Length: 98
Ligand SMILES: [Zn+2]
Image: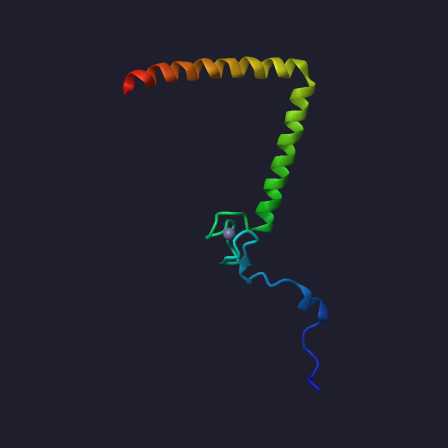
């Protein structure tokens, strides 16, 4: 019979902070401090993944607020019109540069 572990069971259950981070997309083993996968560029840091998820949620909320507010929708339409005029001018200039 093996001797009892000197470490309490709770400490054994904790994830090792120095363990390599295995990418869920490509399976590459990355250093424990990696934020993005060295193989495919996907997020491997749990903290970074949470930040990105939060940013996406905030973006969804902002888009919803814009769609529900007619004044905001009018501003977005106006800005989009300005941008498309700019890109038309860019295409005009780019056409003469070749
Ligand atoms: Zn990867």
